[in-house]
Image 1 (tube, rainbow, N blue to C red):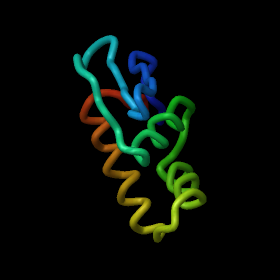
Image 2 (cartoon, one colour):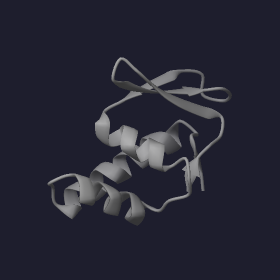
Image 3 (spheres, rainbow, N blue to C red):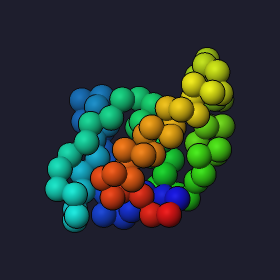
Length: 84
C-alpha cells in the first residue's frame, strides 16, 4: 500500500499536515507517530514494514506499535488516501 499522489504533506510550525488535492477535501494534522507512517507511505510499505520502522524508533511493545499502525492506516483508508 502507499499514499495516493493526490495527498500532499508538509511541516508547518513543527506540525505535520496532509492536504488532499482531490476526493477528500480537507486537511489532516498528525501526531509524530502518524506523521512517520504517512511519510513512509510515500513509497509502498506493508503494515509489518511500518511496524518494524516504528519499533526501531520507539520504546514500546511490538503489539502496541502494530495497533497504532493499523489505526492510522484505517484512518487513511477511510479518507481515501491509500492505494492498495
